[in-house]
Length: 141
Image (cartoon, rainbow, N blue to C red):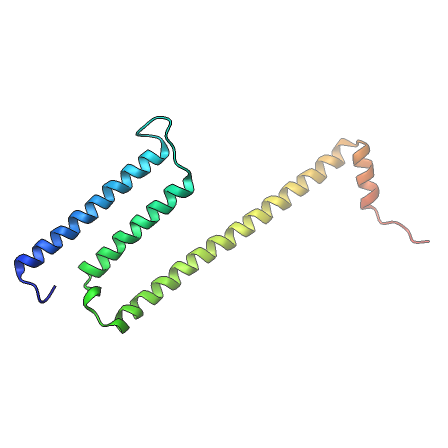
């Protein structure tokens, strides 16, 4: 914005502010509509709401960084040196969530398996006796 006059800079900043406000209002309306709060009976899938909200947030972040933080006017090397750590951080967050979900699912499976085994042992039914026979080591002849 250094080459613009004061009035042109104000007009451009006001335009960006209004675009950000419009996107924010659309985000709120879409979230309320997606959850079924605005129109009864209309709900969107959670994945759709999430993707749209993330996309709108990325657009807002882009506008803020490139206009108000003047990244648009920097040399390409500077832009890349700022964006690379952001992408690495984003990749790390996605990796940690993925790994955490994997561990959570394995823990749930292991707890459910242990619970099923204890239920079978306590019942003493035919299945339980078969289970105990399978669990005890057999002697080789």
